[in-house]
Structures are given as C-alpha cells and as structure tokens.
Length: 491
Image 1 (cartoon, rainbow, N blue to C red):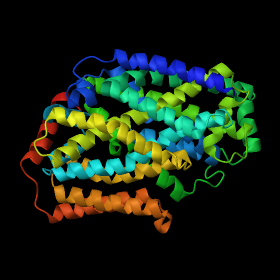
Image 2 (image 1 turned 90 degrees about the vertical axis):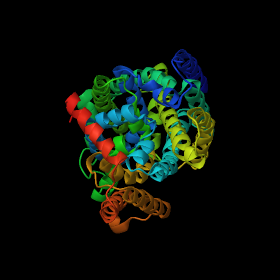
Image 3 (image 1 turned 135 degrees about the horizontal axis):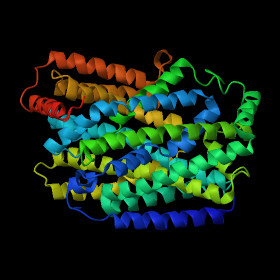
Image 4 (image 1 turned 180 degrees about the vertical axis):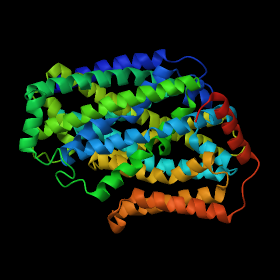
C-alpha cells in the first residue's frame, strides 16, 4: 500500500482526535481525582466505550488475529473465557465504586494500602504494576509498529510507527487527563467496531461468502476449526494464556481504576453491559480476520503480520483499509494512554507520597504529570526489542499482575486478611513470576501465571492466619461497603 495513504489517514486521525481531546478540557483539572478519574462523573455510554477501547487494544486485531492465524479456533475459546471473566466486574465493580466514593481513593493500590492499614501494601502493589504494565504498554506500541511496517512492506519502519504512537499517547494523556482519554476513547471505540465489522463482511464475501469461506478454511487448514487443532494449543498453553485473562478486569489497574469513575451505580451497569456487547462482537471480528489471513497468506513469518497483510491485500479496498488501520492505531494509543495515566497516578499517590510524607494533592498531581512521558519512553524502549507474538506477550505481562488478585479479593471478602499476608503474596509471588518469565522456565509444563497465582494465594492465606487479625479501618472499610451494597440492592 502507498505510504501516502497511510500518512493522510494518520494526519486526519490526529486532527480529529486532537480536537476531541481539547474540547474535553472542562471541569476541575487541578486535583488528582479531577485529572485521573474525571471527577468521578463519567456517564454510562462514555464509560462503556472508554472501557472497551482501553481493554481491546492492538491485542485484538493484531494479537488475537495473529493467535488465531497461528493456533486456530482455540484463540476464540481463549478470548471468550476473558469475556466470562469480565463478569467479575458485576461483583467487584459496585464495591470498588462505593469504597472509592466513600474514602476518596484515586488508585486501586491506594485502596489496598488503606484497607490493610499499611501504606507499604499500596506502594508494593504500585511497584508491581509498574514492573509488569510497562511491557504491556510496549506491546501496544509494537502493534502500531508492526501494522504500519507490514502494510507498507517496510517503507514505514517499525521504529517510526512506535515513535508515532508514543508521541500521540503522551499528547492525548497530558491534554486533559482521563477526560481527554475517555472522550477520544468513545470516538475510537465506535470507529473501531464499525470499520472492523465492515472489513469482515467485505473479506468473507471476497473469499466466497460464509459457506465458501469456511469450506476453504476446512480444506486448506483442517486443524484450524478443531481443538487442539494445529497443535499450538496444548492444555498447559491454553491454561497459561487464559488464567491471566480471566482475572484481567480485576488484576490490571488501568482497567480496575475505571471502576472509580462512573457517575452512579446505574452508569456502572450501563458501562458493563455496553462493554460485554462490544467485546463479543469484536472478538468474532478478530478471529475471522485471523482465519481470512490463514486462507490468503499461509506461511507468514509471524502471526502478528496477519492483519497488516490482510489490510494491504486486494481483498480490502484501500480507503477502507486505511480507515481500519487508523482504528487499530487509535485502539493501541487508547490503551497506552490509560496505562500511562494509571501508572503515573500510582507512582505519585502510592510511591512519591510515601517517600515525601505530608505531600499535598497538588504536588502529587504535578509529579504524576511529569511521569507521564517518562513512562511512555520506558515503554518505547521496551518495544524496540520487537518481541512476538503480541498476544503471548500481553498475557505474560498480565501473569505478573495475577499476584494482586488474592489481596484484592481478600479486601472485600475476607476480614481476616492482613497487611503481612498481602505484602508476602505480592512480593514473593511477583518475584516468582518475574524469574520464571525472565528465564523462560515452565515448571511441570505450566506457565508463570499459574505458579504466581498459586503461590500468592497460599502466601496470602497462610501469612494472614499467622498474623494478628486487623481491626479499625479494615473493619470500617468492609462494613461500609456491605451496608451500601444492601441499600443499593447489589450483590
């Protein structure tokens, strides 16, 4: 595809998204809550679209399509399990929202530190997120790099694509914080789902309609429609991929932080419903893209090239391909924005405030804004390693965040959970995952997420039982949430 088309499309996207971000600049931007949570006044529709754009990033139309290309229909089961895991928001969403509204939490790690009456818990949770989320942000940058490079046969380099995505992420997040990101997310999410669906319709038609499409797939790739199919998805591989994704909505702070932002409980319900519909449709779209590329371009060097090759082929009209490309870039930038905002708010609220006791909200906000480009540059440097597959890398990053899950669940459902238990589970569990990922070790054939979660559960429960039962704020936290849930009629 001509590079001129690519640059024209990107220019139009920058102008439209930039104008949207600037128009979003209203309400109080001078506080941590105003800048990082949109003053907790996000409506249901905007929350749903923003949640969708944040979650479904370069991972979907590049990563999941590539995983489908490589492993067949098992990729669909993998992603549907993630959607099932989102039902955790039904349980934890109201609890996060009520606790955040009552106690003024800005980050999930701040909530943990307060619940366990030990700020070190919040600091450790924040550092764990920094370690494992920066590689996930890098995956989004890499997705943009692979996309523009693949669509132009290398005339626009991988590095150029990642630099572009890094600059856009910094600009959009700095303009107006979460409100800017949420508004651009809404525009991007609608853009993504409409254009991607149109491409599926066009490509399936070009490949012989629905019956012809699946007939070719079954003939040319007989293992693609069965499990374990091509042999990529063994039980241990499937478990290692799905476990981090099942708890993604709870363990990944850039997602769980969004549970503090809805204006009301009703808006939160609308957010979840909208996301589930969006997610189901987008999953089907990504899987069909992967199958279409398998039919049209067998033998690619990596599955991550499936989407770029499909868009650059004659199957998709040039104008439509450019529009979809913009949608994918927008999705990746949206996720990077959210990760940057979350990590910078955690670094300011849960690390800086501990190092500088007595820091004010204004000082923490200033530190958070300064850290935004720093985090983006770190993600860019990691992206230059050009590791693949994108889907596998995304899951590896999320595997480390699984160690936060026991402490998060215990915060609401186990009064006996203690700060010592939370600290041990996060530090030792996270260290185990980090070492296993660094050395590419699979104990008994299982992925790092399996062992990390198992270790953190055992440590959290065991150490909590061996240490004194918490009182005071811990009991107030649990009692308040339970009373309000009963009043709202929530689960």
